[in-house]
Amino acid sequence: KMDNEADETETTPTPTKRRVGRPSGQRPHKRANLTPTVDDPGKDMSNLRCSNEFIRYLKKKKRHDLSAAYSELKEAKEERDLAEQYVKDKREEVEKIKAKLQSVEEELEEGESHFEKEEECFQGALDVITELELQRPGSWNEHYHKLVAYKEEHGHINLPARHRDVKEFDKLCIWVSRQKSQYRQYAYGETKNERPWRITALEKLGIEWEVRSGLWEKHYKELIAYKSQHGNCMVPTRTSKEYKDLGLWVTVQREEGRKFSEGGKAMMNQERVDFLNKIGFVWNVTKFQWQEMYEKLLTFSSEEGHAHVPPVYPYDQPLSNWVSRQRKEYHDFHDKNVDHERDSLGRLRSMRMTEERIELLNNIGLEW
Image 1: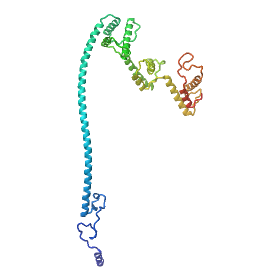
Image 2: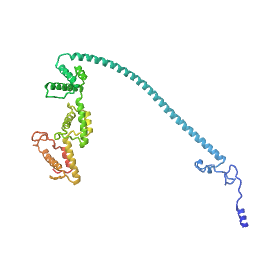
Image 3: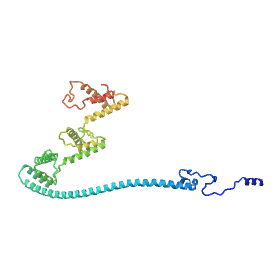
Image 4: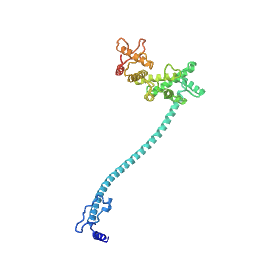
């Protein structure tokens, strides 16, 4: 045992004293490697050498990084100065615009004040003219005074378009309707108004020039309610007593829409067209119904693999009847002796064939 301990004592090297400036484990006569062993010494401080040469290397590297940082700072400052100048210029522009706007607003306020005074003078002069004109004898003034008396008795002047039971009252109703019609023409620029005092007199009585516009909005709301209940705007126009008035209004809209689209005089305008289109209004019933049946035939063809709807088809007999009608219309289309516009009674043909329809039916394989 003592021999073993002696052997261990002999084999254990005596530790040497570490000298400053030389890494541990290196022979005294060898110089330390000046290149750092890690890319970033800060990541692992245990590997950092402490030689004077390495410290000088780090100081040199820091000087290099500091120079690059100052270079970046200079560039950033130049960019910041440019941005600062841009903001300064825009602020000056904004201040100039604000000053100009304030000046214009003051001029506008001044102009509005002047307009109000001139409008007051104009209305005063028009009131004098109106009062003097209404004292003159004439048919227009007679009807106007009758309307004044009607308002004093009933509290309004919302007369119906006609009242055939009472002759004199019917004349007054017709006269009021005529005034509204003439005003409408004036408002649309179709005629000139050489007697503005008449408009002033009627407006003082409380006449509603756009009474038909209010009625249009009323029916439009009814049409929206009809669609929410039935899912479409196809209001029956002849067979329903419940929707008789709405059906008549829908028919009128289609006719007025046709006139408007053709550039003729009509009570329809683009705003109303947009409102009706928004809820899916059907302008051409014939085209709509034809397209609806065509969609049914298209579904039949995709399900059955052909377009041969039998003459007797309990599942959808109207579809079978429609297909038969298309075949007849096809043969009539190619018959020069047939009037394609009107039937034998002189009525306009609503389901007449066209080249476009023939092409659509050919595309799904209909046999003529």
